[in-house]
Amino acid sequence: MTETYNQATDQAITMTLFEGVYAVALNLLPNNNILNIISKAKLEPYKPYVLELFETKEKVNFSYDDPTINFLYMNGVVSIDEANLIEYYVKFPCPYIQKRLFNYFARELYRKIDGLYDPFEDLSDTITDQSIDLHRLLQRYEQYLQANREMVLKDNALGMLNL
Image (cartoon, rainbow, N blue to C red; front, side, top):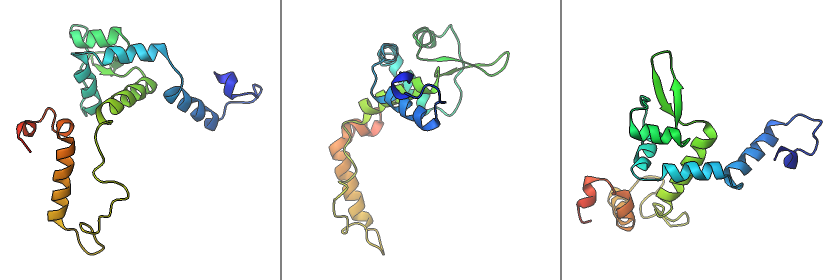
């Protein structure tokens, strides 16, 4: 692939050239290894765990005895972060795999959600230079929830309420 984008093989690869190749690798080129990793990460019961790794601010302890971690590790979805001789944590193997997984799940989870408002919608009845009409803003938000309630309120106790 480098030869495709770097015809001047006697010159160093610049950061601009690298970023272009990296973008192509992230978005255009098929990669059977990545497709295999995604196919494992999206399986139940592993998918919620992988999604949780994107949310957590605390490190997750690594243990081969945990069947979820073991499966994800053996299939290249996660790796070991060795903090020191006695502390080991779960991490994504590299930023490239993390980005590819994030892109996959972001498209899957948020493809169906409409925007809060159309980018060209007239909001003058809600927002002006001097004020915000909170009542109208809440009405707009209620409309948004009505249109997207299954996705927005999924896994939420409020989702059981009939909006």
